[in-house]
Image 1 (cartoon, rainbow, N blue to C red):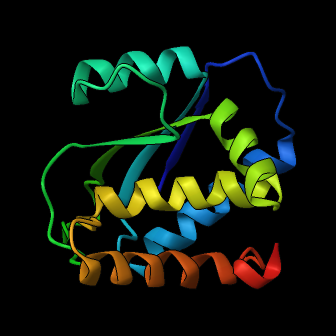
Image 2: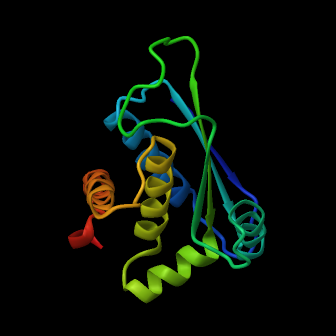
Length: 158
């Protein structure tokens, strides 16, 4: 269950511990949702880069915190491939490190919590979760917090 990390931003330095934590959180999220044979890519970018993606793919000329690009559409919380020899390529998650720092300060919790939360939020989108209705939002928030709590990053643990 590979998690491919690519840091292409240079505005904020990240530590090896931060990379290790976000990778572990994503791997746990994949396991928890029975995606043991899945592959996901996490790309850490700056505001300018994510603004360009947001404009191109969503028509919004502004930076955002996280964008997910699924390789295929999925229903929430289903196993995508039973073949253990061929990894499921779920998709790419892009996170603006600048936004993550800003939001961690605004919300009064650690950068690590915000980075991991955004990574899990993006991962759940790749697995078919969304927040279009209050019911969908509640399911997604519950799934996010269950994963975060395993790493003492839950709402009470920041």
